[in-house]
Length: 171
Image (cartoon, rainbow, N blue to C red; front, top):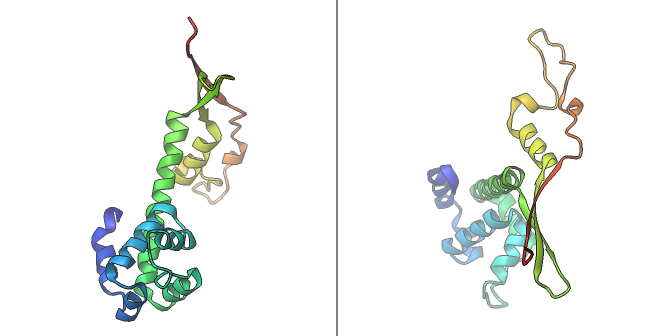
């Protein structure tokens, strides 16, 4: 999982035998953690694992899994790392949409695409910069301890929405 694969494997190998037994196998624990990394939610991961063809006797309960996480610190560490992978993936999607935009397709009555707009969301870009750049933090403190007059809230990005168009079937 990400750059901390060794740390992840180390914690995975320390999960208690009782916990592994409740999942059925260490492979099942790994599947569960991969599901968390792909969706970012323990309850959704339980649903994904349960829908993966388990018999009704082997289905996991979200409440039971949450208790296992609370009782096994190594499982808790693995879950935290899996959630971090999900957060990093979400950040990359946000960045991609903010920088490269996304397509919005308009369809005609016949169901054929008529127009494509490439949209860019300035607000998403600003939120990304606030989270990842000291320059855009919500409050800046100067060397003498005073807050600078200009904060991120003072920066007016307006309602910027850039579009580019492509027409289909029109000359």
